[in-house]
Image (cartoon, rainbow, N blue to C red; front, side, top):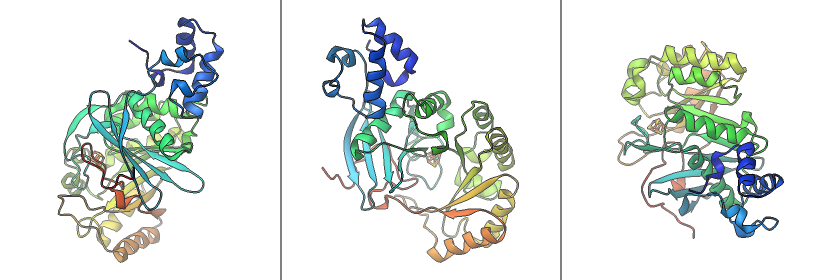
Length: 342
Ligand code: SF4
């Protein structure tokens, strides 16, 4: 079996290169092609013996469709070696290029406002499959990825080992070399896993998808994850803050007439003041066949102002990639992309 390059540390790659009969410095050259230049075709690695790169599996997946949004967002539909499909997204801005990564094929959490969970969980992705998304996106946009958010399909902490291995590869200066501050893991809130993450020595950003200011409403909106009391989740998140002094991000999807009242804003402000956090408001992106609707822009503004008045550091997330259904909660496992530019 050909070894999977992305699953290896540079030390392991060096050993493997030597076992194939090549000098150790070739491992550094090979890593430079893959990680720094996002080159995956052995024929294009001009300073290497072709047989060397051919001795490794670099990409096991392939891009089967691409959609380009008017705002520069690129969404890719990727087919894995076993035929399963996932989506990932690249969001550019002048100073950074952010990759939104999937960690599972489907999702078991069944959040009512999310297209990704509608088909249930099929399987976990391996660390290599998570990282391959970075290479595909980098090749698609011809730019280096500077930021990574684990906010695509799946619950990252439910696929803990692969997610952590992928994060370690992202922040490794000898591999993807992305600053830990520019990596965000977003979770519905699994307290035991959050506490374990706090002990990994990874000063990344932790985002909690809260979406409701009380346990009863959260149970309705996040039927699987909502069984865990909000207080337990926030206590674990505060431990993460204590470990790394990295402010927690609370994500809150605003659903028209459901969780966007001033009473909800006051309750959310009360919760937010119990930990060191900022609140990210996301206006709901409608998904078929949901009956939920987005709130008005005025409601979003009023909700944000109310939080601000209550002393909460609040941001309203700029919508990205709506025209290619690449916005939050719109990624899916298995459907044709709406606008394939090729
Ligand atoms: S919001 Fe996240 S956790 Fe919930 S169903 Fe969608 S992908 Fe899964």
